[in-house]
Image (cartoon, rainbow, N blue to C red; front, side, top):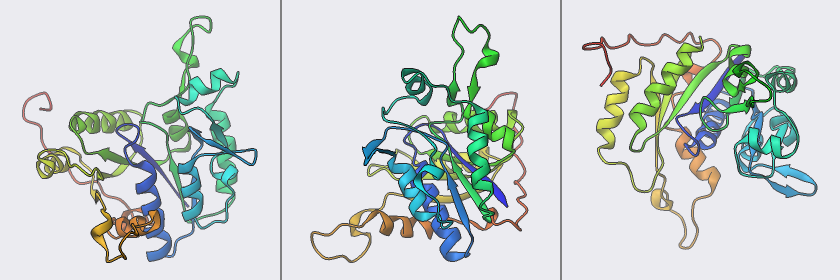
Length: 270
């Protein structure tokens, strides 16, 4: 069993879309059993008394271990705000222990691969100490859960102005936490691409000592021959994106060998 955690340079960076495409490629191309887990979500719709997060709904749809939405996303809040703030508003607390307890249900499915999608970026707080609580030691982050489970990490880079700094800082934070960031994905799914996109991707390819397993481009409805007035469905776009992702590095029998890091010139990255 392999545990893969999906993080990103920031929020709205395409974690769910890329996660679903990865799951689709693993299940359809390599016939893997994939379980999904999104431990925390904020920004839900109340449907028949159940809090439904769109990201969790799609992960549940594409995973193939017959999971319930509640199993995929056990901690959910209605408000689209930082989860620890939403929890405070409801007089609740989110702890690493909670996430780990729910994760035991995922492990019990005995999938080939567990794909876990984070929320926000790498340093998403779960619980923040206040002055009455005293020290920073009571602060917990989503990253602490990933560390506790010793998961491999994939970094989604939202290709926009500032992404070089965001990607390098996130990668450094993952490594400083003692974890293996095994690959990155260039998410270019904006209808208006960033200036000098190719040059920025090339720079990250040189600066990040891990393989790029995909460049996910914006998928316009004109990508396929469809009848007038009918756009591509979300699943259509997932299928197209899945074709661009090399998921072989994620297969349980694969031993990832990060490429050698480039030798820095001087003492600082530029």
